[in-house]
Length: 168
Image 1: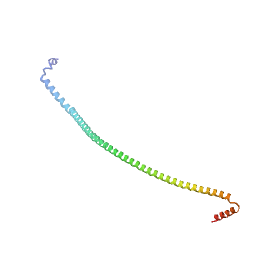
Image 2 (image 1 turned 135 degrees about the vertical axis):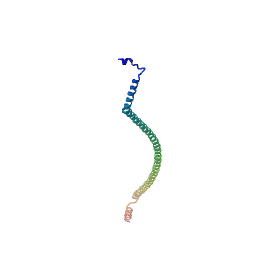
Image 3 (image 1 turned 90 degrees about the vertical axis):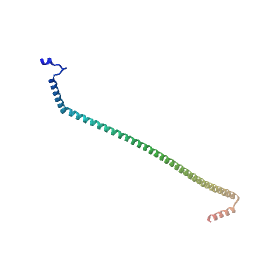
Image 4 (image 1 turned 30 degrees about the horizontal axis):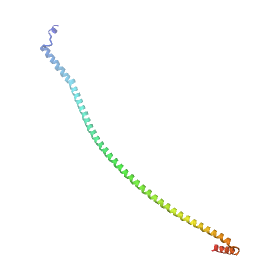
C-alpha cells in the first residue's frame, strides 16, 4: 500500500514514464500492424470508390447534357419535318380540290351539253310527230270532205286510184 500512497499522477516517476512509453510504443506497433494498415487501406479503397462514383456521375452528367442537346436537335428537326409535311399536304389538298373543281365543271358542262342535245332531239321528234299528226288529220278531214262530195261513180274511181297507188 505503500506504493499507492506515494503515487501522484501529477509528478510521474521515471520508471512509470519509461514503462508507459514502452507499452505505448508496443500498442502503437501492434495497432499499426493489425489495425492501422487495414483501416488506412479501407479508407483508401473508400476514397477511390467515392472518386470513381464522382467521376462516373460527372461522365453521366456530361452524357445527359449531350443527350439533351441531341434531343433538342432531333425535336427541332422533327418540327421542321412536320411543317414541311403539313405544307406539302396543304399543297396536295389545294391541287386535288382544284382538279376536282375543274373535273366537276367539265362534267357539268358535258352533262349540260348532252341535255341540250337531248332536248333538241326530243324537240325535233316532237315537231315531226306534230307534223305527222297534223298531216294525218288533214288527210282524214280531206277524206271526209271528199266522201261527202263524191257519190256513186266517183267513189269507185277514187277507190280504184287508191288501190293503184298502194301497188306502186
